[in-house]
Length: 130
Ligand SMILES: Nc1nc2c([nH]c(=O)n2[C@H]2C[C@H](O)[C@@H](COP(=O)(O)OP(=O)(O)OP(=O)(O)O)O2)c(=O)[nH]1
Ligand SMILES: [Mg+2]
Image (cartoon, rainbow, N blue to C red; front, side):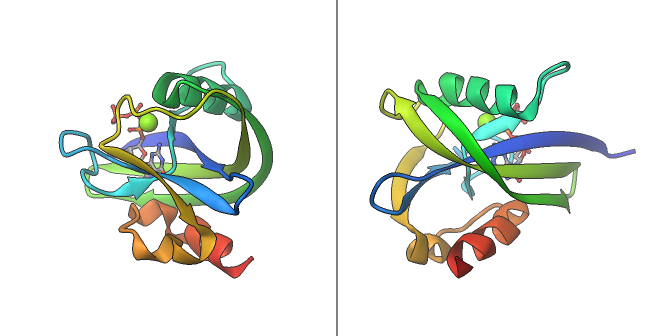
């Protein structure tokens, strides 16, 4: 049976209506796709706790988590991913690259110019339409 993972992704928006997009590296699973920073929820963690921990680990900054945006399940070749995304704001620190190949701030209307991981498409559509 295929492995299932439950993942939280942070849609981090700044004061210029730009969203922080992260490029997965060539050695990661789903290489060279853009995603929202975040990762798998660990046992006993809430989604909020998992998101804050992942962002501390991956971007070295602290966020506040706001509204839930999307809940999508996507079946990849080897894994089934349930991705839940939340609007977030940075409350301290500046995002720095630790695991990703690149981080960039992209305006909402230009989000569709990036090659997003398939599980992210419903969230991207929502962000484009708001
Ligand atoms: N963080 C994150 N993961 C995503 C997104 N879209 C999407 O399909 N994924 C997939 C990629 C991975 O297969 C899985 C978990 O992501 P992850 O790579 O951040 O978690 P991890 O470090 O614990 O996992 P791994 O690379 O060791 O497999 O979810 C997204 O927007 N953000
Ligand atoms: Mg991650």
